[in-house]
Each structure stands twice: as structure tokens, then as C-alpha cells.
Image 1 (cartoon, chains in turn yellow, cyan):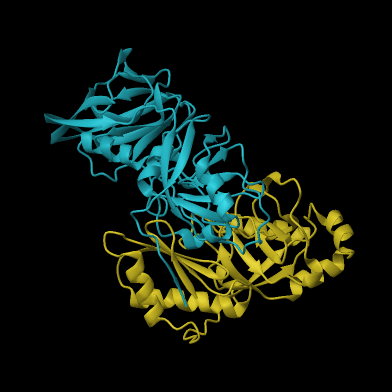
Image 2: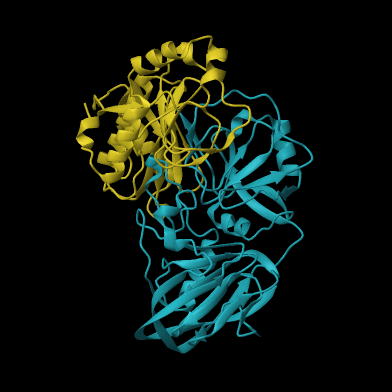
Length: 235
Length: 312
């Protein structure tokens, strides 16, 4: 674990720089430890794959004091919170896939195999970033590993499911983006009119299942009308 | 140096509704406050006024709490018709503000009456002006802030004025003016921006660091509330290890794969994958907010702050 000052009012806590569940567990345990042990003057906590950024009130804390406090009190080898994140089931229509042909060529897979592989894994939400509510999920089956698009799209439609490298994600809103688009979910993953707003939290486990265009339309309509029991997506 | 007189007030609270009618919106006009802090874990940018010092000064003049929303006005201002009366003040950039055709001074408390037209002319100094109105802004919040979320307009529809839209303020009128004298920044041929080493500072060679600090940068046209892109003769394009994405904050300076620096501003995303060479000190981030495309800057490392590194 390495702690360094990040600007005047934040610290960056870095763990072993690799993408793995174990390292991420350390990040999340550290985040909980800080929440419990530093009562005041923490302005934000941004967990990522293998780092945690902590914002603090610099009228109250000095960077060095906080760093020393964490070094002396937090032991990264003791995972106190065996957090088994929530498990979410997300429907995806893989027929709404603008990059299907390009990916079939690039990966040498037919689409049925691609969908089988993408729905076979349980993914972990490692980080939210890039856009509000955008989940960075991993780890993708190595057979699906692909590059970002050379020319990013100016407008990716909201709720597009995408992949890049060993990651998979979902666009919460219309936005420019360079990931390969493999499907669309009818579920709003950012809904400002609900209390929770963001569907995902860091630490969630996610499973995708395939739906056809007809089910997609039905579900989309159900979400729009509010005829959907959100509990159904939690396992 | 420009030496301007401002005024402060003891306020005489008189609640009445003041409506700002946008007859023209200008280049980029939005409602801003200190932004939404604490939602970075959900990927929500901090946002907020680009030049927070000017935002505070404008609010102080009209007798508002300093975190009251203001209108951030960029280069080419809006035309606003007042319905009702109240007090306003403008701080930050000089964008040739006028009321009913008469030139307004910056950093002054100004009374406005029903039917007054506030408009802006040629940008004279700086990039962003802040219009404060004395009273309570009647706007919905999203995640604790009224700052415009350009990436999700539905979340703050009233904070992004459009032609014909209106913002309502429960306004008060002030009296008992006391004087405040402020020194406003002025156009300089070259800005000096103070920085601290960032997380990946040590991955840059001595030669690269020397180049970085010895040269002058120009603000690119492609600069906005998310980031300022900089251009220079010598690019920092040494081959670097790919990073696993991690947090960034407003003020972080990243070096892109093409070797150009980007200064992340208030609306920047919360995570990034480029090397974070430096962080601009918070005070100087306000200074950058007043810089326009093609203006020039240099960086100087902040020695007094004693940045530290601890390893285990």
C-alpha cells in the first residue's frame, strides 16, 4: 500500500496495481475502515480497481497526518468485510449490437458463442466513472477481449452494453464513447426520478441474460410506466 | 492593476419575486454553485463555478450566503429582462455588462427595476463573469447542488437557461452600502500557474520534467468546463506503461498519449487512465477559469507546500 498527497485536499491510496477481486477487496475494506475510523472532515471517497482517493477538509487535516493515521491503523492483509456484494441480473438484447459484425471478425467467434460467453460470467463492479453511474465491470472472458474503436462514436445511445479490453460496461445516458457496442438493456441504469438514482454500486456482482427484441420492447415499456418491480433484478 | 471599488450591504429583507427572463442566452450561460461533492464514487463530476473566488465575491456584494447559486457567463453574455426588482452584482471577467445601455462596473452592488435589460458586449478581460442576485434562487437541486449538469440536462433543466426561459428569485433589496476595494486580475502576456507533483510525477524523466517546466503553453480552442487542453512545441511523448484507471480531481494535469497536457476542470469526469503528472493548486484553478483560448501560461512547482511521499 502506498499513500501520497493528491493535490492539496486529497490522498491517493494505491494497492498492488492489477485488476483482481482480491485487490479490490482491499480497496473496499480500506474504504470501510476510513468510514468507521475517521469521523469528520472526509469530503469524498472514490474507489477504483486498485486505488482509493480520499478527499479531506484541509482546514481540519493535514495530508501527512491522515496518511500516517491510515498507515498505522489499517492493515490491508486483514479483510474484515467479506463483502459479498449484491447480485444483479441485467437483461440484454444482444440483437441490438452495432459492432456485432466487426467483433465476429476480430474475435473469430459467431454471435451465439459470443453471447454465451458474455452471459456465462458473473462480473464485479470495480468502479463507477467516465459518466455518472457508468459501471466498469470485469473480468471479461479472454476470448472476448477487444480493442476500443479507433474512431469513437459521437453519440452512443443510453443503455448500450459495451466491451473494451477485459472490461464490460453500460452507458447510462447518450454520450460519446469508444467502446464496442454488443447489446442494449431496457433497464434504466441512471434514473433521476427514483430515490436510489444509480442502479449500480461499487462491489456489486452482475449477471447478464439474453432477451429477444420483443421482450426488450415489453420491458422497456414496463420501465417507462413504472410497472416493474426492481426487486426482480436482485438475486 | 485594475483597482475597483465594490460595495457591501447590510440587507433590508424584502421578499419579492424577481424573474430573470432570458431573451438571449449567449455562448454558455449556466447556474453554478460549489457543485456536488461526495458523489464521485457514483461517477458524478464535482462541477460548480469555474472561478469560485469570483462567485463568492459576487455573492458577498449582494449579501448572500457565499454558496448561493450564481449565473456563470462565458465570453458572450446573455440578454436578460428583469421582472420585479432586486439587487445584483457582477464579478470576474469584464464582459462589458450594461443595464438599459448604460455601462456597469464590476464588483458593485446594483439595483435593478422591473423592465430593466441587462446585456453584455465585447469581452474585455477574462473569460467568465459571475452574476449574483440577492435572495433565494428558486431552482430544484440535484444531489445537493443547483450546478448545471451538462452531461445530464434533465437533472438540472432550469440551471441551463435557454432562449425564452426564466429563473425566479425570492429577492431582497439592500441598503446601507459599505465600501469594499478589490484588486481584480488583469490580462497578462503569460500566466504563471502553481502546481504540485501528481501521482505519476516520478514516471517522467528529468529531461521530460525539465521540458515541461521550461516551456510556454497555449490554451487550445478545445477547452471547456471539463478540461483545458494545452499546446506546446515539445511534446512529452515518451513511451509509458499503461495505467489502470483511477481517480482524478479538478486541477489534475494529465499527459495524453499524444504527449499534450490537459488540465482537468470542474466538470471533469471522476476517473481517468492517463498519467497524472501534476495538480494545480486550488487558488490557481480559479485563475485558469479566466483564461481564454490562445492565451499563454507556464507552470511553476510549489515548493512551500512540502509535498510528501511515504512508502511501505
